[in-house]
Every structure is written in C-alpha cells, then in structure tokens.
Image (cartoon, rainbow, N blue to C red; front, side, top):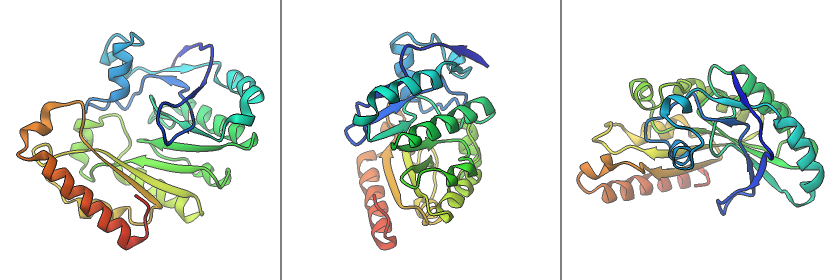
Amino acid sequence: MKSILRKSILYKSGISSLDYAMNPVLGCAHGCRYPCYAWLMAMRFGKVKSYTQWIQPAIVSNTLELLEKELQKWHWKIRHVQLCLTTDPFMVGYPEVRQLSLESIRMINQNGISCGILTKGVLPPELAELDQRNSYGISLVSLDEEFRKKWEPGAAPYQERIDALRYLHSKGMHTWVHMEPYPTPNIISQDLKEILEEISFVDSIDFGRWNYSSMISHFPDSNGFYRAMEEQVRTFCESHGIEY
C-alpha cells in the first residue's frame, strides 16, 4: 500500500453535529460512483488527479505518532472524534487500514474521548471490547447487490455490513445507519420498508437524498418523492423507538 506523511491528523469538523475528525488515509478503494463528495473535494483541491488515483489509497504512515502528540496537547478540549469524513476506516481489502483504525480508536478512548465510526466495510468484532460511548455506523441505501456493484464497487456486501453492525448492537454498543445518498426510482426501484425492517435493531437512522448529480432531476417530482420517503422513515423510527 502507498503511504504519505502528514503534519497533523486531528482537525475541527465543519459539521455542526460533530466535534473533531481524522482521516488516516488519502483516497478510498470503495470507489463510490454517486459521485462521492470526498472525491469531488479531493479533485477540486488537487489532493488527487483522477478517480484512478483516488481508488488507490495511500495510508498516513505517521498517524499514530501524530495522534499521540495531538491528544497529549489537546485532549482536554476534544469530546469526540469521527472516523472518517473523507475516507473509510475499515476499507475492504486493506488490513493495514483496519489495524491502524483500531489502534487509533483505542488510543483516543484511552484519553477519555469517544469515537464515531462510519463505514461501507465490515465493522470488526473487536470494537465490542472498546469504550461503550463509541458509536458505530454503516452506510446503507439498498439491499440490492447489483446496485452495490454498480455504485459502490469496492465496498462490502450489504448483508456483511448489517451482520457486523447487528453483532455490535447485541454487545450493547450504540449503532446507527446512514441512508444517504438514497436513490430515486429511476436509479433503482426498491421498497424502503424492506431496508428499514432489515435494520430495525439500530439506535439511530440518518436519511438523505442523492446529491451532486443531475440523475434525480430526471425523476418526476423528486422533491415529492423524498418528502414521502422522509415521512416513511420518520414513521418507522417513531414506531420502533429509533432516533432519526
């Protein structure tokens, strides 16, 4: 795996609901074709030159060294760290990324700070042994494997993601699902209820529309479609005691 060096690893998130974040890898082998916002930004700011370069990730080899120094200096003001906003902490096919993410989470937890995890990979069972304040999430917008192969070609199969999340939930960990970008029926015709029933065990669900693409504008009244889907998610979550 390629590697790079960075001057810092923790940064203040620009998302109001989050505190700090870290990205121990540049790029992502999952290669989502939505298009991926992280890839668009990496292209815009010259961090990568092409999609081909993006899906050949480079690990930040001095991650743990930087993390240790920055936690020693700033642990008193950091409440929470998100892994990750521009890459995937449990990237399929990269055991070195998996190991680095686990070691990073352990180090952060040892400093009294919780972590939030979001992945299109498979959440390791070892996470059940870590801080109970951590939250673990998967991205999931379909159950159709043909859809995944087209739009998330390098990511883990949906059922593997769900099963790993279910295991962590059974161990008392906080679990959630990020349902974005949810596709309009001209992209794939599917039953949202079937997906919701499959993840009815989780503690929280986030739902969002398909962005950064003109494809949804080709569907008649896409705004009306998303209002109906949002209402369906809201009703389901309220009836199952799930945050949304």
